[in-house]
Image (tube, rainbow, N blue to C red):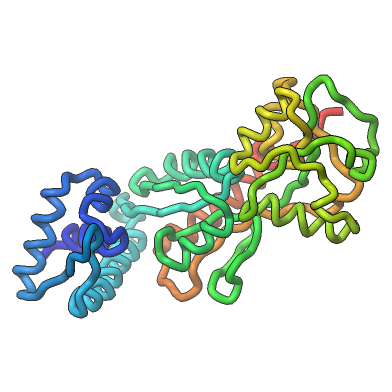
Length: 307
């Protein structure tokens, strides 16, 4: 039995599929099957039952999964502890992020951390904040970047940065500031689909300002902020989005961006992880390093709007 065989076994157990596990770790399905067969021969026990297209753990497989995770975490901890002597750091961090952080924060943070620790590899999955939170509970991800808190009794949240939500308009539609949302209710708006962290924060801020979301004339609901920006650029309507997400189109002159009097509070992005799961030490190093990067790199946080 070898540790890399246990690592492959863990992937199959979590993906419930030989083919999906093989795709995740860049091996052929036959190679994955061979390693699982070797483990079954080593222990003299069946590890998986095949139920249609899915595979599920046998009772022995469930115990092996527990101890495999413990052994792999111990390996990661040992390598991290010895990194100053050996110069070696190895591991994989599965990152789940909401739409805005996945597109505008995570690539920068991952690239900078990888320069410092090239032995740490990443997988990045983009989804709504609520689904990212669920993936942390189901152990599909190790760390999340979310724009809203979910399952707070089971997930630990750490503030990453704060920013504003802004109104964006086509380049040929400009307003004088200060600008109130009440004066815009006759315009059409493009909104995010439910489940988005941005949408949840917007609804909360509007309630506090005494405005129901239903008062906005919604012409469309999109699940991608990039599509929303492009639609606004094409004159389809107005939108309220993350200031970080608006920055590139604003600086290129494709759209205008304004702060609204009713949206006084800052929007917060959080790191999140499962409280009950033993985390690898480099997860916390990534959190600390990311926070320091954003404090030193204002270009990757919310920048001031153009006057």
